[in-house]
Length: 252
View 1 (cartoon, rainbow, N blue to C red):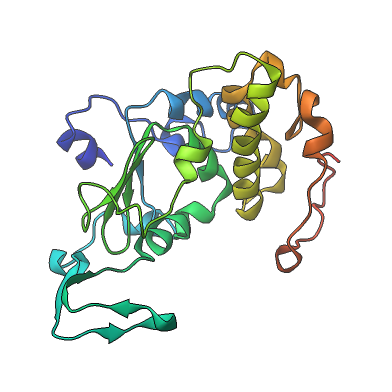
View 2 (cartoon, rainbow, N blue to C red):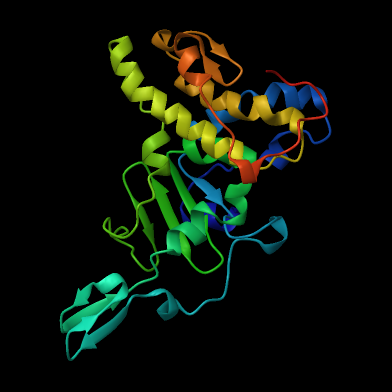
């Protein structure tokens, strides 16, 4: 992380395990409520996205050519999957699951605390298991596609659909369109992730709520907003993702 920060010519680096006193309940209670502001105000978030823990570092040894699209020339028309026809000519073969496997479903993004980091950070450098990825509010890119992922085959909209736009709506009706889906997307992504401690569940999503708060939404009530309480209560669990209730009571 220090190497990346220096290469980017950025003068400050914030690391939670160093900037929050470990095993101090008092410091944790204070700092955990401010973490959302830290990520939202950062220049860029450095994420070891492709690795299960901190022992791997960020960097990998990889042959860049393996990530590049493969040029193919067809000498004749070919009937492809589901009857689609590829006319003879020049094509590029790409791994259209690259972003999904390398970022969205990568080990780091299965963790609950990272949902807040990813949605609030204006920019993220994802150090993946096979290549480096870039994600911000206007662009997703990778070493294979440094100018941006082709829209017709890559459909990741996580950051665009949930990021907290500083422009605020003028009416309740526009809030409904502008914020409700964003909040629902955030809660869905968060609910699918894992937390080491169940007790952190409400704290880890509070940073998102703090950044999204708006008078038209009403009061924040443990994952829901008072002005849209009826809509927020109409949720269901995915059967194969059911988990046991937490040992310690958390909220309804």
